[in-house]
Length: 123
Image 1 (cartoon, rainbow, N blue to C red):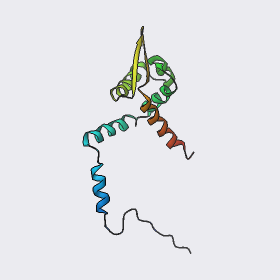
Image 2 (cartoon, one colour):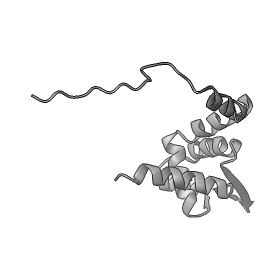
Image 3 (tube, rainbow, N blue to C red):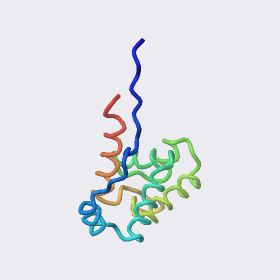
């Protein structure tokens, strides 16, 4: 019978490298930046919002297009779009009686694209 080696996910001896710790403390993010970043990821953590972002990654769409595509009411889509807009993930423009949404900028495209690539890389 072969014994399986057990791995521990913490150091067996507590011996931090103080020079590394000090260097990392100098690079530490401000709490307000950490909060904003956590809010960004929390916003992107909703499946409906992910579906909206994925659709908008392809092209600009109006609220009724998104409503039909995702089989949701316009008010439910608008609610999710408002959250995305408040977190600077999408922008809109009004044309006549229609409101068109698109991803806010290249950062959003890259962030979403890299996240998707990360999830799909082992499939």
